[in-house]
Length: 439
Image 1 (tube, one colour):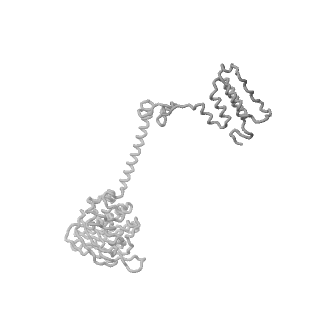
Image 2 (tube, helix red, strand yellow):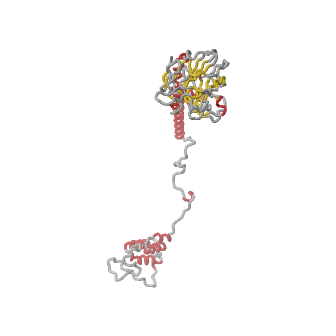
Image 3 (cartoon, one colour):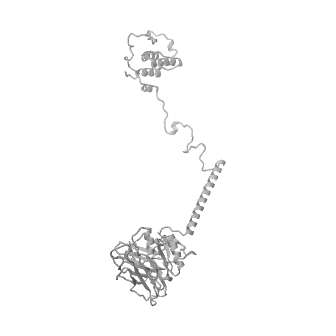
């Protein structure tokens, strides 16, 4: 006997250990179904028994070779032979178990004996492996043994009311192996690379619901499954997504599986993954080398002045020429603020008078000196605004300044700031007024 540990169960069983248990039945194909029983830590009625499932056998091309409608009742822990015996001498390669009613039945194993003496066994321990990965409720810890062994695979629930799985199909030759080493190798693969079991519907499909003609077909491999020297599949991705569908699956659903061929999750063998990593590293290094080479070539062209892609001399970051340009070239217009506009920017009436006078009478440096003096006086004392106004009104060209006025000029107020005054100046603001007119 051979038992290989995996995910808490001894999953791999060699056909050699089963050959005496499931003996040749007179040159005919025979199927035996094992039913689970209540877990040891549970009490109450044992519900693992129910209705015997419908059994379908398929050849290597996915065609049905024999059927058993099931329906009959089975008890917990029983080992029931199928009621059909076919005259076909074709060796079945796939089996499908379909729930016959809503009375859930827990299936522990299915064993196939062919007219040629082949013995293949699938068991629920493989379903446990997938159930645990997805925290499902489709596996149950039945303590029943596979006959002739001390192996307890548990059982998988089947019912047609969507509580559990409605059906399960599997490739018998990928689970029951003629030799112990083959069993060991495949269990190692399923443990290390669970996609090659749980995401490979051509190997084992777990049907939650079936639609249309899906009950009479399966996903299958229309190619030979080749092994490497370690006993692993040569091409994991082909195992995961390279299956063929024998019919229209309609709206059938599956337990965390992608049934459409070519859409399975990416799954590489260790050799494929190493090759992919090496290719990615080589591509990255090649791209880096090409980038460095291009940069060096451009720098060389820049030095030689032959780089056709270089910006023109003097170009800035935005591609413009550095320096000043006339406003007219930038889409604007040149303008000068008129002198007469200046008074509006002053803050006191006295300053306005002075600014107006300055803008209208300034004509030569000597007169500008008088005006500047008046401006300083205005800053020092608002009362001197009159002086500034008078000075501005008499400023003229040098020729006009030599002519005598026929009207005597009014006497200028005293510029002695310390002299007392007898009253307010005619043009002075009221006492206490500041430059902005505020007390």
